[in-house]
Image 1 (cartoon, helix red, strand yellow):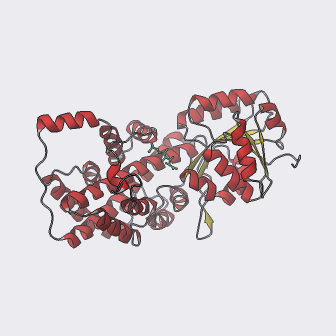
Image 2 (spheres, helix red, strand yellow):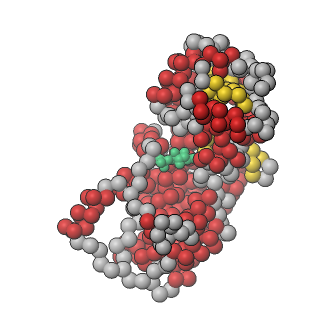
Image 3 (tube, helix red, strand yellow):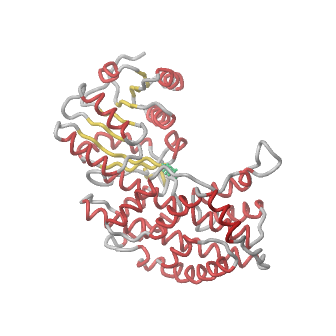
Length: 431
Ligand code: 6PG
């Protein structure tokens, strides 16, 4: 085992933390890991055996002494009080100029409070949003760092190395001062909620009004993914539609209950949008639907009391339905990105973050959950006109919005007639 000081420290060796460490090690960085659960550290060191870049500790003093100075310590622990508990635990061992980097989904106000409190002791604190889930952390996520710019430069090369690449460009860049990194990640998640809800509504229309089988829907989403709707969420929707259930003869999707929980980032996005104010009705609607879906018992009772819906009419022209829905969904995607990015513009002014919208769009092109081909053109639109106040005002999208708006009207009115709920398609059209 090498005794030389490590480039980085990682606190929290769960799946996300371990995967990020392995990614860093693959790029030649040496890392000291710290987790009270020693078995996690031992497992990680074993997984890194071929590189030999990782050591692990379960005593905080040993962990801190293993780091080169000034120290760069990353945290991948659950957001909330645990972040504060970790900071208090390590603070006594830190020196001026050390850097703590919170890579979790922390609320931006918590991050700002930590930045301010630690700055008084000359310790840097950065909030870094990471998207892409466990696989992304291992193979290349989209990374949204914010905070002190000098401190950021100590991480910059490593973040570029471990992030996803699109056309050779890293999906990471400095987002802005203070809590900008966590703010951008929060809005990313808000957009994620709305896109997921729009896909769910599209699925429902195809299934109930289109009379499509799972296999036909698999084919539809697969085709969409080869066109202008190409993106991660469309890709995984196509995949789940062909996934067999391993416990029955049926399909996995048909076994999943129609209720969902959330970790809260969508609620944070809507709450802050209301107070900025910045209108994001598609995201608000998606957050509401997520909560409403959880009221399954009430929905069942209401169905008994208020009456079940009438049987829908199956449409006879499936091809036209798919064409119209694709056009509606594409326009809706654009409108959702427009809402999220406009909110970031407003927030950047209010909180003085200095966020560059073209940069945000460009680092979302790969690695993250909302990655989509469309972000290439969105990046171009903001590069062409950095003062663009709303994506819908970019000439490049005018035609798609005009056609998509007509399609959305047809799709929404037919869905309403057929008792198929389309709340987020409606909010999107109304915006
Ligand atoms: C990501 C994801 C990830 C997760 C969110 C949302 O970017 O990797 O956004 O962070 O999907 O935490 O979770 P909920 O949808 O459960 O709120």
